[in-house]
Image (cartoon, rainbow, N blue to C red):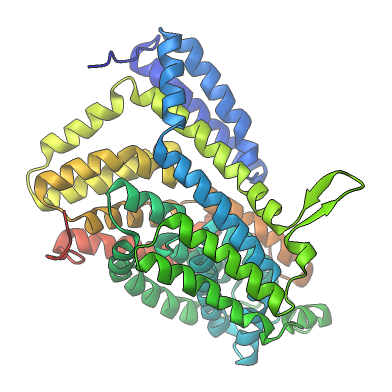
Length: 463
């Protein structure tokens, strides 16, 4: 049995680096909502503090490197990079613009436009597998157009974040879907199919609520010709065939093909369809500048855009591993296992534990990886199916954490509302963006209902 790592100051010393991390992230988020790169220095400072407080620094360093080098962590980094490349190709093709054009062609306004914005973000997030990428891609188009289309700004930005959450929860190329499935030894196709039992009812409630509540409150000058021009997108249906790309990836993964195969075929399909239809120039995909000895293109841009979250996750996994080596998380998990008496209480323990770890780390994927072994063990003990376990984990981190204003999704979403100010839409804060994410709140209600009643369990779910 390995010796537990000890810190100066005991439990207080062990948790001090995490307190520094949470305080730094909170301060930076309130100061201007930086992307993940802005959090790197905070994590470095937290690692330095952990090193100083560790009694055995060599053992601490081994634990940190071991946490970073986990196979699942490497799979996540690979998935982020490849999914980001596919997302860049989809975005550059004008796919989102064509979806906006389609909603405008249908004459949608007010609450109906807000509901359409939610559905557009559902499609995009399911296609690209990232909530933050969906927000960054869609919000600059959908939010400003809300002024001319008579939409309630607060409900509209909540619909954009809610739609981004939908795909993060169910997309087979989403980091949380991948992590929840892999930690429970579950095939991706079975996880996605079973997760629809939670996601679709929540989305149904959300779309009705967005349609009812999304009408204008009188904010914004709809008569402004600049705003009208913004809403009257010059895009057309030309990029709609790009929907074949996510459909193909989804089909491959539902057929239990390897994640790497699905993502690489997705990149190949997006590039081929985009170039073949004239939506992308070959030089956009990849080009070499011999004069400057440099390479450019969407493939490189996609990989580079995933560097921020990849390094953030590596550092954070290292910090988490340094805490795990003290035995704190093991004792927390052991306590949860000992106190579980029934299947229902075991499921509640899983939900509570992943929620607590997510609260501490503010990072859904790290929370899933950290609590994955515990969830698998307690699931085997009580006969909880692997799909059910994966769903409790993923729905747990895609519900209230996606709505709370001090978590990164709400902070980033709020920052995008600045794009709407020139068109008459107000700049909103994380509180408004998070609390109006009605899909995540509905998802939480569905999960709690499932934990209380057993909804979502299946006798065919393998343990």
